Structure formats: structure tokens, C-alpha cells
Length: 215
Image 1: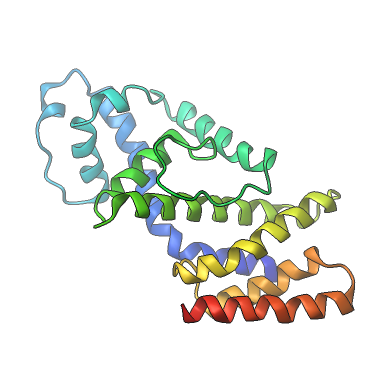
Image 2: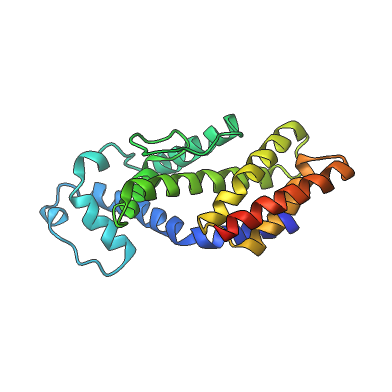
């Protein structure tokens, strides 16, 4: 239950972006069903995330036309992106500008992340940060979902990857320090089975976390 709570808390800061992605999915379906309507090409008053997305879609028809035309198709793309994390649980953070959509990012997620990044003063750096945050959250959700899995080797690999990345998430303000400390304690139980070794590792990881919080 503690792990579930950690994941829920970690997701709070991500809910806004997920809501935007959900609005984008709804907007894609709306735009597709109205793509032959002249009004769909006219400027839309941006009074909500959904209408803002529709307005953006009207200006980006070539990109949107590549998206699935049904809700089932969009859901399938989300599932396919999530499968990439399952296939590569130890996927490392991406460094430098990201020009092409990573396989673990769905088409809708990619469209929304790029849109959010463009509102930042340094869009390339912001896009890299957002993509890495999404990767971390998907890895975290996969690790939590394997709580009762018999594949302990895979769960250990995920725990190690998340532990390694945790200080950077704190440095980027993706997680606050108390939240990260709770998550760190849970991850260490999977990463290090021997209690004595785990205690030494915990001290080292705690120092890394303190250093990242101070940066």
C-alpha cells in the first residue's frame, strides 16, 4: 500500500499534463469528425485546454492527420508506447535536444509535450526535461504494477534505474525531497536484498538526494 501511495503522490505534479493529453485526445476526435467543416479551420477562442488544443490542431493539420481517427486507435497507441517501457525497463534518460519522437512516447503525448515546451523560453531543453519526466513516471508505474510479480529480476532492474534517476527528478523539481525520500526507501528494498548492504547503500543514496536538492 505504501508503494501505491508513493506513486499516487508522485503523479500529482503530472496530472495537469495528463489532463492536457486527455483533452488533446478528445480534441483530435473532434477535429477529425469536423475536418471538412470550414469552421474547424477558423481560430477558436481558447477558454479551456480542450479548445486551446482544437485551435492548435486547426493550424497543424498535417501532423494531426497522422493520428488515429478513433478513440480505440488512440488508446492502442498509448498502450504501444507503454509496452516500450516494459521491453526496456532500464531505459536511461535522454540527453541533449530531442528531434524525433521516442518510441515510449505516444503520438498524442509527443504533440502535447512539444506544445508545452514551445511555451518555454528554452523549448529544446524543456522538451528533453518533459520527455525524461514522462519516461520516469512510466517506469515508476511499471515498477509499482509489479509489486506481486514473480519476475523479481526485472523489478530489481527497474528499482535500480529509478534510484539512479531519482536525484535528477528532485533537481528538476519533478518530485519534492520528502516524497523522493519515501520512494527511495521503497526502491531500496527491491534493489538490495541484503539488509547490511542496503543500509550502506541507503546512506550513499541519501547523500545523492541531499546534493540534488541543494543544486
